[in-house]
Length: 212
Image (tube, rainbow, N blue to C red; front, side, top):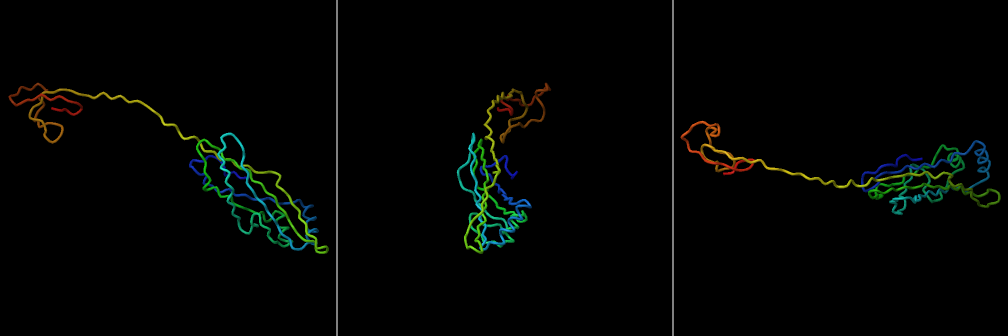
């Protein structure tokens, strides 16, 4: 059971899902297999691993197939692989569980959508009877199909607000002369302080920075 699912923040799932097949048999079953395999030749294991889409509300599954890669010496998916009797027993004892990766790095997911999969498996051991030369197969399909879910939240909606600005303005009697290179003035004292003067004065009126 994979726990790699969950919330996705980007336009692609961007994850790789590990899948491991548990083939461990009971001790009694292993004894039966040991007896059986002693009478067999040309033993091959065939694993079919597939992924199915889950139908649900807000489903975002695209229907694209899986991108499998095997881990280590695991049998290639959907290809018969020759094994010895001992190798087959190692799989059946659970000592060598076949492992694979489902690559979802580029799988797209839209805002507000859910993407869910179930992973399914069937395993067949095919062999030939040493005495009769007859070939047969023993197969098993996984009882439980693990489910994995991904979801991407809706994009946040743009907010709207209003801002009102009231400019500050005033008028002054100033000494000196206005600056010719920007705001401010060429004054040597504050004429509005009420100091008596014979200096030249002028009237200035404007906004946050006065304008003559």
